[in-house]
Amino acid sequence: GPAAEETCDVLVIGGGPAGSTAATILAERGRKVVLLEKDRHPRFHIGESLLPLNLRLFDRLGVRERVAAIGVHKPGARFVSDRHGGKHVEFAFANGPNPDYTYAYQVRRSEFDALLFRRAREAGALAEEGVRVLDVALDARAGHLVVARDAAGRERRWRARFLVDASGRDTFLATRLQSKRRYPHHHSAALYGHFRGVAPYGDAPEEDGNITIHLFDEGWIWMIPLPEGVMSVGVVSTPEFFKRRRGSFEDHLRATLAGIPSVARRMARAELISPVTATGNYSYRSRVMRGEGWLMVGDAYAFIDPVFSSGVLLAMASAEMGAEAADAWLDDPARAAPLLRAFERKVDRAIRTFAWLIFRFHTPVMRDMFMEPRNRFRMREGLIGLLAGNVHANANRQLPVLAFKASYYALSLLYRLGYRYRSGGLVREAG
Ligand code: FAD
Image 1 (spheres, rainbow, N blue to C red):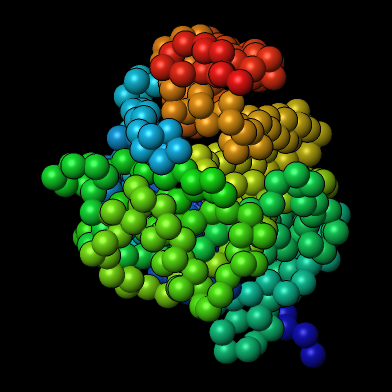
Image 2: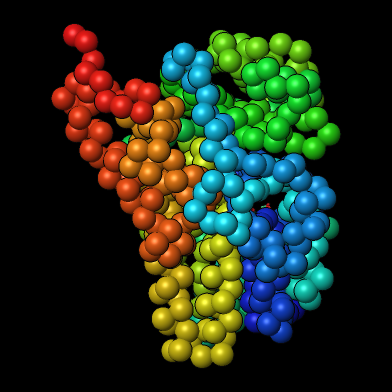
């Protein structure tokens, strides 16, 4: 017959950054938390470049030093565009609007995710690996019934008062509720691997820790420095671009990198040290984020695009808010209602802020704004504010971001009238 039912206050599906964050916070509040991860840590994951506001969450979880020990110090982001004469611009987080968080880290996700998972276990969560959730019967009155299978093939069953879906791109609940929606105008895919021997940007004698985004006509390349001289290199482009592939993923990655001058120079002596992985058409959002006694956090709810390194921050920040709302719900569902509404509103607002920028990233106006970020209209502050992940900031800190958006709309109009933005000023395009 079926396995005996175990009980818990909260069951968390998925032991990535979102799941481990939620489990840690709830276990620290004294809740009986079960955290189930289908894989075994350390396991490979993409999403290696973090943002300054992640530091606030590391402090809250008490892991800042542990992250520092496995991370590469990231002072900011550099954008390079061969089309803009091979020139580059740098956005240093230290110049951003938030004086408390002036840098970030880049991490091997295998180590980072293992660290956060261990932290949840230390906090008292029953964190199990090799256990895949197969089925859930939502039932806020009797407790949600969760059926899983462990590594030995045995069935396990839990009754959970509250359910947190942190299953990442597997989108466990959104798939079953058929609530997953693709973004109609944004389709990208990525191809990536780890290399050794990638040259630093420009004439720099050594790697400075910045993420470099190399723009090309059909997309962009990321170069993320990791510990021990390893560089994560990835191409983001349209599904059409990847359909033109001849040969293996590795061939296509190499050919693409060789075709972009500023990238080719850096790759001249590089050696591939990992398999090449592809992720197709990954932008989506679930129509619903929560229901009676359950909610979704991180990629289980939505993911748009990695261009601003916002995925892990949104995953951990939504998990933090979701955990607090769940904790209140366990005491009194009625009193938790405003918290749950605030959770939903804030997560959606953060996603909308990044979506606004991401959907415009390929336009000539936005690319010129990136490559000519003179301090007109407080553009640089606005940009760094966005890049620093300042999405929950107060109105005062949002001001540069609003100014940046206003500039974008004003410039778009002027572009239609034949103007271009060059060297911090407007010029009339000849012809
Ligand atoms: P995940 O990290 O995916 O964790 C979910 C976990 O749930 C997994 O460990 C999975 O094994 C487990 N799981 C799934 N289903 C089940 C089940 N049924 N039972 C048990 N366990 C289950 N973000 C950044 O911040 N910086 C970047 O530079 C960046 N680059 C990216 C590049 C690409 C190409 C892509 C596609 C994404 C990138 N991201 C980046 C986004 C980042 O990967 C995610 O936003 C982040 O990992 C989300 O964390 P999460 O905890 O929600 O999900």
